[in-house]
Image 1 (cartoon, rainbow, N blue to C red):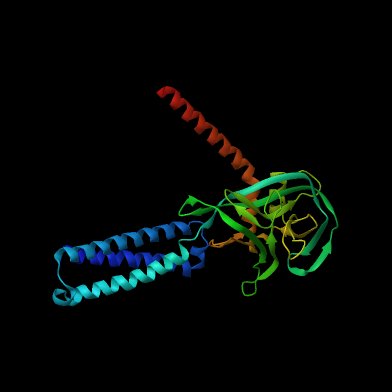
Image 2 (tube, rainbow, N blue to C red):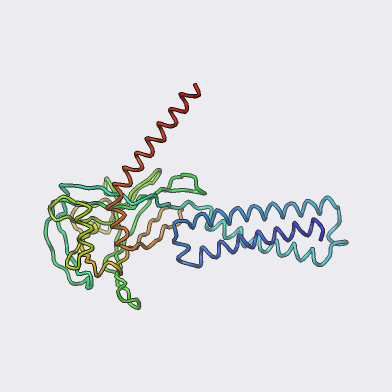
Length: 322
């Protein structure tokens, strides 16, 4: 086998690998909704570039040999070229459709506590029957605001995405055949509670509030409520004031009591989309989000210490060099 045939076969293999990786990420939901799916996209893009470079190399070898296509090319060689062109065109089309767009990357779950949080109408709903609800009226007290912080990227490079909006749904999967959506609506972004924002750096989409019933929120009390059979934890979701989305006015929130026996089949479905971007679409187990939210303050402090130590180390190294 000569060098030309080796290059042609290598280009076909790399193009097919690129096509296979894109097909896997698009067809299989678990892979598509993974936080690491963009590494597969990036790897497929590298295979595509490698295949294109090998194809160009094979064409260059043909030109160097100066052998006309009409006279001296074998049937095998022409077949190789046809496979390269067809595979390459399909791969490039898929890459252009899904890879050239920016995407949202999860950074962490944030935790913000408030001791004087106001909800004008807190509407309590049954976790097993969303149509059964009782209004608790006005709530003013302690809450933990749990949010999903994301940042826009394009090939692992920070970018900006306009008109970004988020959607959150609470799903009861107690019956595997008939899942029930208990709550689903647009969710505001933290700080100003706007529903539509332009994301340049990092922004936090509010997932839910943990209601602490007029007493300070403590990690131990929340963990205890989820572990005891008789205990329960109340989570609330902000509800938009009208179809014309602007900002959440603290007017209405839908609340659910989560007990230990129900936490295994409660999931949170999150979608985030913006102009020209790939939609972030992922399901989280509610109990995992609650635990990550409650412990995020501790991890945040640890990260600050690590950042400080890293900065101190860099300053010391610079001083030693000088």
